Amino acid sequence: MALSQIKSMLTGVPETMLATLYGRAVEAMREDAIIKDEKAIEIYNSIDYDYEASFGTLWRAMYTGFAIRSIIFDREINKFLSTYPDGTIVNLGEGLETHRFRIAKEQGLWLTVDVPEAIKIREQFIKPDQRHLHISMSALDSGWFDYVPLDKPVFITAQGLFMYLPLEEVKLIIQDIANTFNQGYLMFDIVPHWVSRKTMSTQGWKLTKNYTVPQMPWGLNGNEVQSTLNSWLTNIEEIVDIGYDNYPRGVMKWLSLLILSFTPLKNILASSIVKLSFRNQN
Image (cartoon, rainbow, N blue to C red):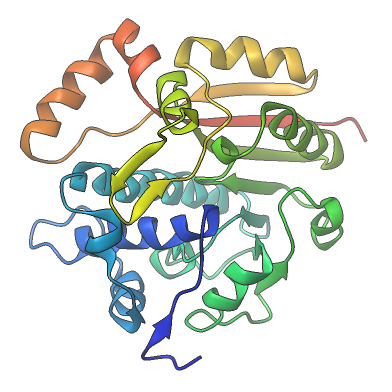
């Protein structure tokens, strides 16, 4: 595939890598941008894909949300590397995410785990190297565990991933991660039940005539986070419901401020970001 004109053949869940790229790049190109992401802009401009035809403009606030989400993940990865500069970062289902270019620290071992078709697209723009490895397999394949050093803390991200899996698969991968590594963190985002139900409905969630949001079987409301994870795991040190930062502008700034500041509304309406820490006895 030519670098300057890639005809994306992704469908379903892997195509969301283009939606999140779109969100970050469009936000980063604004004069009042909340994120600096030159690599995302470069990739966005290089792929021959009609983003607006697929993802539309009416849902622009949703795509700003992808930039907000990336900022929060950047923030937590930075904290981890400040404490454990020789730790390991594992990004599950990373797609075209560009954390490694936004985070200035030349520290840690970085692993990208994604399905083969996503890795193939990623490597047109982002090359692996000795410190940034690409593992071409599903996040559900525990074979990637073998690439993670067991003698160092690990920070595992699942950004825009778990909601696309059935509950039992989410439960299993979280349990496997927490029970395999000696010390670490797992950070992931969740969607509330209403979003899950909308995508699973007969008509689906059709953003435009060209794009239907992939089904999201797993939804979790904010008030269910602690009890759900504690029922799955016995070695959790802490569960933090980080949530989302407020939207930066427009009507969504005030709407999100209202929702995020009123816990009952936040619990049932808002997506969120969760970080859990775990430790196993040696």
